[in-house]
Length: 393
Image (cartoon, rainbow, N blue to C red; front, side):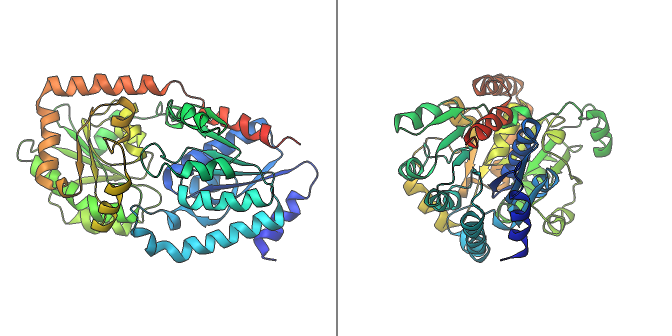
């Protein structure tokens, strides 16, 4: 038996302890997973955790066997570059489920991998809680049949998802969106502005190219070039780039250092940087919703390999690709997809927001409406209570 598993068994065999295996395969899931772990431990200190996660989950006390940075991919064909790691992680988790028989398996987003792991848990009669639903309402709706067979309970974060699952006889609870729990009260806007060298009349542009290596390679050069074009209208423009923990700095610096404009890189949460932005250029994903919740006007961009794009067009069944637009049911913020993602087009959309006060104010008003649709905070606490209930014997 591997050393890591033997350590878990030593602790799990203690009478007063429960063992939870938790899987968070991406940066945003690492954040939400860490908050869930803290919430569970606040209610019951006799729970120990192991599984897959990032630095935040490690700091929360999770013994991780694989890092979420090794697992994260974007697009359908890009998964092949991480296939070896993903297979190894799957084998390790299945071994733990078989040998340790944890009290609960918690899955966070990352659907293809997690739905597969749920089948093993079901085989060994381990209860499965799925937190943050796969986007079955957007594409591959047939996955709900697998979820119904393998998952005991869904904790969903978008209001319409609860009824969608209940219609298919899947037990689901709407817990609210975990991004509403992100505390940005300690953001020192003036301090960040000083670091940027930004004055009152210096527009600040946020560059958020994603938390996966493929996204950085596809989107950051275009974003930087767009910012350069914007300096023709705003010579004193300032740019800030919050760097996800999953991204190594040596992937960012060669792109940024080539630019004639100064781009400040921040190793901090997105919310701590977004607060001073006048407009943001954001990769499609969780960060778009975080930007929307903070009421920051944005342009959403999405670009993957040509094969992934055309495969996606076949199966994706929603009118918008950005989460804010999907939640609102209309195009609140502009979306640039695949061939539309050019520096000139991106600069044009961002400048339109900066230069037209009516467009900007209307966008902010609708973004505030999206926050209201998402409801109140407390997602981690609600999900923690569900998790503990599922561990009762």
